[in-house]
Length: 259
Length: 166
Image (cartoon, rainbow over all chains, first blue to last red; front, side, top):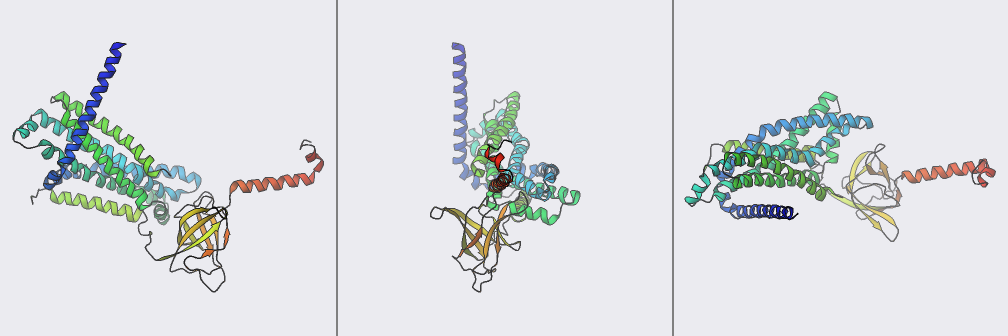
């Protein structure tokens, strides 16, 4: 009984320490951001690695998600004789939910893991320590540009995902199934509002960008500097950021779209 | 300013992202129909608005001529007050009537505007006098049951008098 209480207490203290360290890192990241943003070339480099390199997987996934949404939506909607609404269904589901969420999950797998592995290996190779020895702040030089790169890349990727998905939905609905193109677009335009739906989707993707990038950086920065440590940290990045994205998505949706 | 060899590609990426956002706003959303045309405001009182929502369409002869601006409850008359923005380009006679209609069986509700015959036109701040409420399914069923019951009552009055049992 005593041992159990001790274990719970120790676990709680460890968890609290982790949360504290994460918060400290987050604020030191923010505090060093102005200086990091002043050397914007580093951020641009990261936008290239995190954004451009993810474009292909995001585009292809978006296209297929759009295909599937249109097919499944048509199957259900045609029972009620309102198959033209498939455009609205595809657009609303992509813009409000699937665009930001699926992009964030793919981003965690594609870009988050590479961030964690890169920083973890830098730590294992004692490059971060070497930087500190040369009076270069690793948070400012290594972490902050990556953080802002992810922050910039993520909403753009989510927008690309939604747009490509809508085009994919159009490809299935109009040329393949034969729904009237005018009804497809007019139903969509009648139901999607720019600020309530598109705008909130962008806000969501910004929040997810911060979450995924920060979790990846934190795991890389705090991993134990061994091959096992780096591999465990990479796994944790995917698990934690996916869970965080899904949980945050529920909270954001409840706040934004509750009427 | 330092430059890197990936700058052109980053620029392209940002352009693609911007184009995607623009596509979402213009083609999927209704940024263009968020018309910034001049409108004038009229109001109408309904006994029951059913499921009418703000931003619902106002149609005349099936053409969208305006949008519902706001809906509120008036506790003096116990009616719903609906404020409508009509496009400046469309003018309606003062005695036009407004109905709450439904597009399709399960569709969205909208306001149908039927033009009257008066010479003068509706101006900003006017009130549409003649209104027809939304059809509420429960009321319809209630009326139907009432009329059925009264039919039955007149057909076999003794049966109804003995508690409805034959």
